[in-house]
Image 1 (cartoon, rainbow, N blue to C red):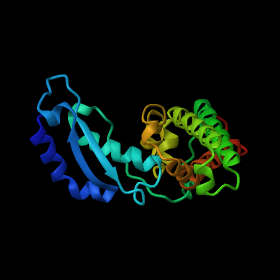
Image 2: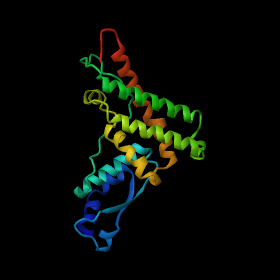
Image 3: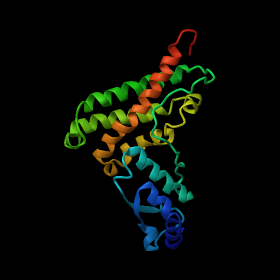
Image 4: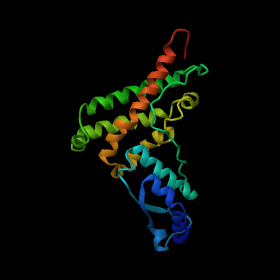
Length: 215
């Protein structure tokens, strides 16, 4: 893909990019210089609106969306999600939580609670200045991301509002794109996204432990 073709694609999807919080997107690197070849990567630099891209899951969503625009990137599609808390639907058909799913829920719950404990009563400003806490919380988020991949399909289907793709992909962002992750985004991820994950785990574990059920 050459520079003009890449720019045309970005321009054609400018309204969607703006809705996701991308202020500006530009092609750079070998494609922009006209020096690319068959094996070259396509590099896209973005400027994001921090008010719109509030947390790490939002950031992962932007990366996935842009990756989907260019087939050569091989990135996964974005998953649409809502911000409501997790709860089981009333009169939902019973479904057993598998042993693997139970272990995943326990792992997620443990690390969500640890992240809450590390932050304690810190506000965003204090968190941004506390490197030790940032590192500790980021480690919790990495583990949550990894463990989320072990949640079975049936459990994910019962909680479609959880952005499972973003949760599982976020680990790669923490490990490989850490320079692009702002402490404020980490803080918001904990404050705004982890409660629904915790609620999901509590609901599933309570369900599994209810009399007459077994995993």
